Each structure stands twice: as structure tokens, then as C-alpha cells.
Amino acid sequence: MIQLKDKVIFITGASSGFGEITATKLVAEGCKVILGARRVEKLAALAEKLGPENVAFQEMDVTKIDNVRSIVKLGLDKFGVIDGLVNNAGIMPLSMIASGRIKEWDQMIDVNVKGVLYAINAVLEHMLKRGHGKIVNVSSIAGQKVFPASAVYSGTKFAVRAISEGLRVETAGKIQVTNISPGAFATELGNSINDAAIRDSLGAYEKIVQPAEHVADAIIFALKQPPSVAINELTIRPTAQEL
Ligand code: NDP
Image 1 (cartoon, helix red, strand yellow):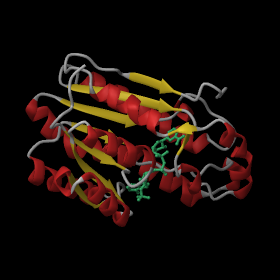
Image 2: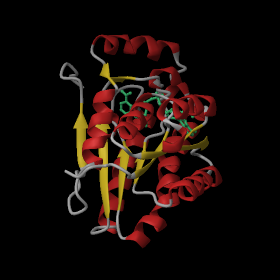
Image 3: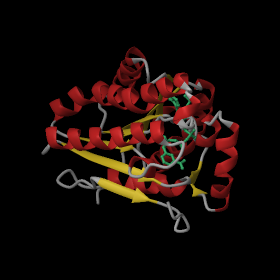
Image 4: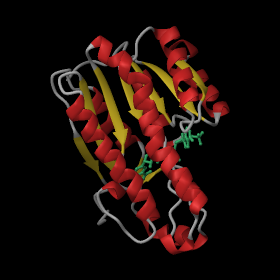
């Protein structure tokens, strides 16, 4: 495995959960990080903690391609290169199809699918010109299995897996592509569930969820592979999780 010192990593959805802890651990390894999310005040506090010289951050809505291109430019202006992308921003407003929460379907597709594509688009030309780059797309166990209320969320995460594989075959020899599928870990993700009954039904997971730092460690393991090797698929669950 390689050292990540001085590598520049762009993380979408860095204001909480996996993104925040991955940023923290990467800076501890000597990386520079480019952090985007909508809650810019959380990014500002994180940048202060991690050392402003190590961080470029900006308010970014991943559903807006101009926002994503703008933060990539900010990062390139500050650090000169982008070595890796952790394509992590996501929402999970689970609900039954019959509930017809069309606005939530639109949002999920915009953030979880289009947002992933936009972030890839914003860095890929730069990486291909350099001849190398690392892209870790955050899918989910829900990108491998479908359960009641997960149809649309699972659809977006199956899509992330398909996009990861497509990117891998199209950029073979240059881009190290990883699709990571986490199970249930403790983050703010459940807050995006607006259907009270579904939210209550997930209470059982509270007993088994594990700290988000385990997923950050797995992401960093993927980033640490030498350029000639890529961990293409990585599934990580709490041992107690059956689904
Ligand atoms: P959090 O809710 O803690 O983090 C989600 C992050 O995404 C936040 O930083 C949020 O920032 C950001 N985000 C949401 N919408 C947007 C947007 N429109 N533009 C930019 N950023 C956005 O949850 P997790 O850390 O758990 O989620 C990270 C990823 O992990 C997601 O893709 C999720 O689907 C996936 N995942 C999580 C699992 C878990 O058990 N926790 C399991 C499997 C997958 P802000 O609101 O400030 O914009």
C-alpha cells in the first residue's frame, strides 16, 4: 500500500457522517482535502479543526453541476492537483412506492445518481490528463439488495454500482475505481427519512449500527492501493447485520 501524504482528495458530503470522518482521517495521514456540502458552517468548523492550510471548502449542492465544477476549481487553485474523489454525498428518504413521495424520489435520484455523475465529470478530465486518479463511489448494501421501502433508494444505489463498473471499464489503466457498499453505520443518514412509520420500523438497527469510522477506514484502504491495483468492490457491514 502507498502513503497518502500530500495527496489531494475531494470529498462530497463532507459535513457529517462518512465524509466528515474520512476527511479527518485523511488529514491525519498528511493529505489535503477539498470538502463540499450544503451546510457550509459545518465545513467551516471542520476546516478550522483540521487546519485551514489543509482544507479547501465551499458550499456545494451536488445536484448543481456549476457548484461542483466551482469547488473543483477552488481546490485546483489552492492545491494544484486532485488525486482522488470520494463520491459520498447521499440521502435516504425511504418510503413505500404506494406512498407516492414523488418529490423525495426526484431528490434521491438527483443527489444519489446525478450528483455522483456530476462529481465524476468535474474531476475526470483532470485525472485522465494526468494519466491516473482514484475514485471511490459510495453505494450501499441497498445497492445489492432491495427491501420494502428501499425501492427508489436501492435503485439509486444499484445505479451507483453500475456507474462504478462502467467508469472502471472505460478508464482501465488510468483510474482506480472502487464501489463501496456499507451496511448500517451510525451517521445522520436516517434524518432524511420523512415517513414516520418507516423511520420507526428501522429502530431495530440502532442496536447493531457500528461507528462510521470503520467505513472511513475502508475508504482509506481503497485509496491506499498503488496505481497498478484497485479494490473494485468493497462490502462492509456490522457483523450482526443479517440484511
Ligand atoms: P450523513 O447524512 O451523515 O451524510 C450525508 C452527507 O451528504 C452530508 O454531508 C450531506 O451534507 C451530504 N449531502 C446531502 N445532500 C447533498 C447535496 N444535495 N449536495 C451536497 N451534499 C449533500 O450520512 P452518511 O455519512 O451515512 O452518508 C454518506 C453516504 O453513505 C451516502 O451516499 C449514503 O447513502 C451512504 N450510505 C450510508 C450508510 C449508513 O449506514 N450510514 C449505509 C450505506 C450507504 P449537507 O446536508 O450539508 O449538504
